[in-house]
Image (cartoon, rainbow, N blue to C red; front, side, top):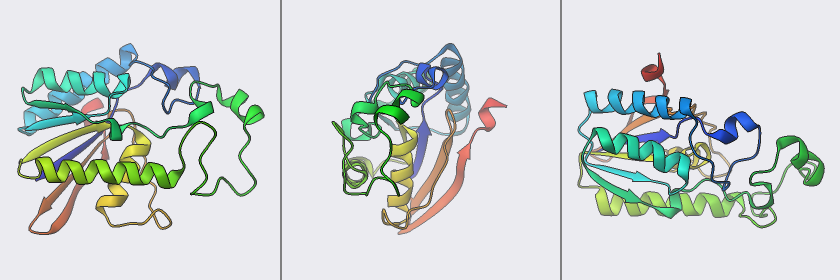
Length: 199
């Protein structure tokens, strides 16, 4: 089984310099263009059997553009949403630093931000999404998961067996593509954060 892990294209929040998280901004024109290039790249190389997406606009739009190019099952999974950043959602980064400064040494993993979730809760939610996907769609040859930077970070660390405490930091750019293959009990990484489709 190949897993295509995809981050959404550029969203309006990216150019407004605000905290996104659960703030539900759509793609920009550039984001739509990025998603279209990604869709052409993927459909020229892979036979996608299912697309599973976060319901937030920026991911859903990216996934829908991919679906238009490859006819397959289309599933929305709420557990693939980005980190629930509570009071920070939609707030400018400058204002957030003043209103809700980070505690000295950072926020502990088990402590939720006001109105949101903790990093441990986020990780558990993403792990649940992954186990559900592997259980329900593990018989398919190729599955595309369209989500968010934070979600993909936890998906990758879960797949690689890294705990929250020892997790690696994986950067994912606009429509960045990670490809992993699960085969005979092994996990093979084909690429991380590929953006060759944008060149």
